[in-house]
Length: 258
Length: 258
DNA sequence: CCAAAGCAAGAGCACTGCTCTCGTTGTTGT
DNA sequence: ACAACAACGAGAGCAGTGCTCTTGCTTTGG
Image 1 (tube, rainbow over the protein chains, first blue to last red):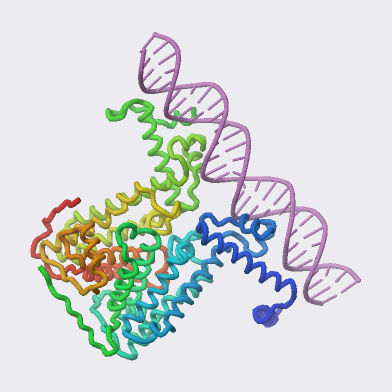
Image 2: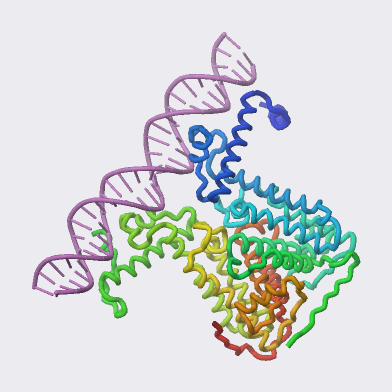
């Protein structure tokens, strides 16, 4: 077969459902994922069983392998869906009035809270993507795209803030400068390298806060978790250089005690 | 037969152990945990199999249940050991010259780097304790003690810095004040509540940085990871209020607090 | 219209966690 | 010293798992 034919066949396959067989395939695939997601939410990734999914769907377990070559492939599909779900939530929060107006730090916190809310509502799916990677050690290539959606939301938010009011760029040791410039060149060439590096650190730290809460590490340590997280997210936004007010007036008043 | 050959019958001088039976029990228990830890490090918690452990030790799988009532109990023992291992590393780093002298931010970073080093050297054990909680949703009571060792190291470090040079206490919204005071009352009544709250946030954020690195989230994003982490840890220390300058009191403040 | 490909179902393999029973062996009270 | 007792190891067995192979049946495309 010529490559152009293969390409045409693929594009055709993607654009429209060809026949009853293909329609059945996408329906069954969706049903499998739906039931798997239900079991995942109920008992966690460790308890997810192909046979149980097939049983619940009234089909033989061996038939399930026509749709997902292995259990890990099913989990990978769920991982992609989870990344997309939390990414969509972040993007939606960004588009919200509270996420697109007001102080930049508040917008940042708004998106952060949306991610946290999703994580608390879907702890097992969160654990699947931000907890220990349960399939192989290296994530499949399909996951890298959806995995970066949340990060890109924050990146866009910081870019908008930079273009509107600038960023308070903090200090950075010289040995980290080439790394920061490399990051900026790959992710956001129009932003100050120090801010890009700070954003990546804040990104990881944000998920540290969320993971500790979802995974129970804050048990009997943090009680007022909503307020604690919102404040921490605001501090994180400030660490990236986002300003507190509409006009750049960083009242950075650190008073020395004792 | 097979198994009793495996038991070492050397004359030992552990008079605390009552008889041969009790000695055999602690030895077998240790052997099981050792082999389990080996398999954990090799293939991860998901692949850890009681039967494989028993097989490798030359004993029947059913005999293993005399020592650990279930697979989850074995995992819990490994969790406790992992918490103790990383806690010990943190305490050791704190006792090191680099961890007990110099600027407070550098001491903080020293302990943080020690934790990170351990995590990178034992990714599966790290995932067991700071990744998704694989057994039940609530950690057994045995784990809460060892789990807090690392946190207490940072707490002691901040207390020493506070007593020597004070802390730069940042702003805190009023709605978070009662929560901060509750945290301080429970963890460190002698420290400013705002600093205790900031330390808890920094604690979670620190493990966010480590988790993202161990779990591969920094793949193709952060390259110079040593420098990146060290700098981020320093910034985290600064966010708690630790000072950059030379400490007035050279790190002889050994305050074992409990 | 017929070969080819896709599909569902069943049997089966190797493995798992866990339970039960059955001899054996070390401990302990008398 | 001896017997009752508790701890122990081994083996069989149960229910469940991921996954493969074979066997028919149905849809598809030349």
